[in-house]
Amino acid sequence: MSKLIVPGPRHWECASAACTRHGKPGAKRPVFGQDRGMSKSWMIDELAYAGPEHLDPTFVSGYDRKQGYPDPSEDLAVLGAHGVGASAIVVDLAAGTGQFALAAARRFRRVVAVDVSPAMQDYLRGRATEAGVSNIDFVRAGFLSYEHAGPPVDAVYTRNALHQLPDFFKAIALDRIAGLLRPGGILRLHDLIYDFRPSEAEEVFSRWFAEAAKNPADGYTAEDYAEHVRTEFSTFRWLLEPMITAAGFRIVQSSFQRALYGTYTCVRL
Image (cartoon, rainbow, N blue to C red; front, top):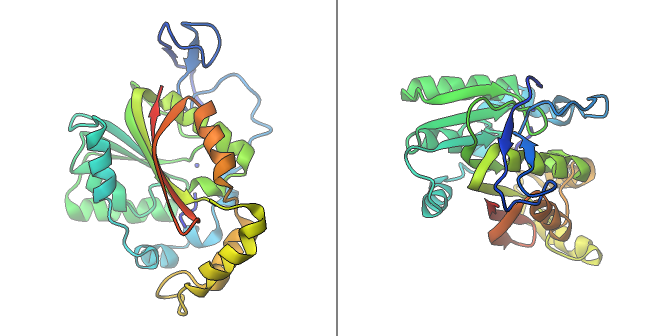
């Protein structure tokens, strides 16, 4: 469960003539992460939502083991199958320790590794240096504050981080991701998402907790999962998917594990 976050000059991209998502055909929309002239007094501080453990270098050093060393090969294959090639620019939002970012940097021209945690950024920088990887840009920011420099990107990847935001801000984040991507660009999303009815929560959580690690050094414990449910913002599938489509994506693939963990591949319209 990765935890995860700066405004500047306004940049604009022209929507296609057929686009009506943000007003009349041919309307302009701000690129992801750029100031839209709105007051920021209502914006949350993503660092405050990150969870103190993700700011702790000791926890960060053992993070991949606790996560089970997720293999990014399937994600890379999916991006490739959707036309994301060697010349692509890919943004990893909530890059964490870089399991995906490091592998992606060997496949794509440029990877932007974005994370709010200084400890995560430092750890990933060290890994990149050790591996001799030089085409990763490191940005300390997050879903609601990342500023992108340059043309729209080809793909955005995010794993186990969107749940850090309450639903209102999830919708804002998804809209901003859409603004970052070129038309036809790909969003690859993994997260703890609930694919069950509210009345089934006790039954589903009981099974989930029973399968948890007994030793926190080996993985997430039942209490870790319970704390996640109490204090973080995982949401129901039937709430998240309308947010994705409202942001201007077409969901082309989705899959779920144990009605708890969702993976989405989405195309920016």
